[in-house]
Image (cartoon, rainbow, N blue to C red; front, side, top):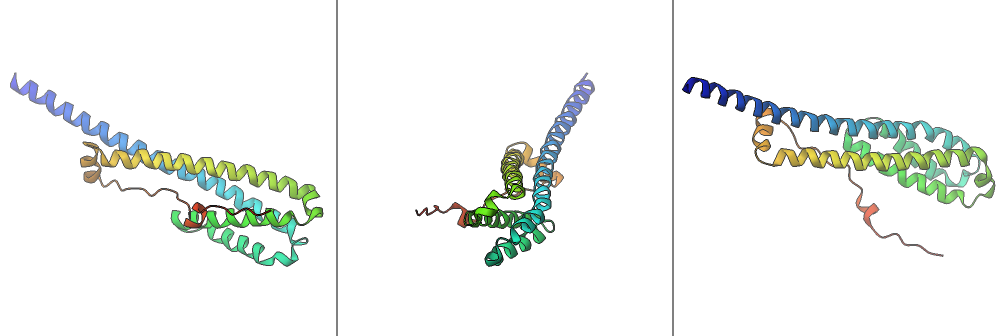
Length: 181
């Protein structure tokens, strides 16, 4: 009788540990999937940028530094760690804002159908990147929370699960924007 109860308790403990382990694995996979979705959108933007640059290059000869900034950030976007990709993504977002702001000074460029289409595509891609970043950060939050709550925290340490970093913004992006008319 005691042996039967002991076997039942052992099976229950093993099932409990398996449940915790599998839930941590699911959360880690969700984080990786969320990052992959960001990567997909970054790749999409990466592919659109050369078309944008070739479209605006003729109009924006005086704005060469903006185009160079986009090109440099684009190059660093597809290689490196999550942190480097996040930083490059933020740089590209800033540079694209500059291109679209400068484009306001060029009526012919604003009227260019190809430019308008690329601007719309990039705007949609930026929205998708924003959504993907939010989903990634939500996934990271759930995962990191699971690593810290009892009893999962005990098993997370035992099985070597590591904390994930959020996809953050640069300090300059948090400052108030000064608008002048």
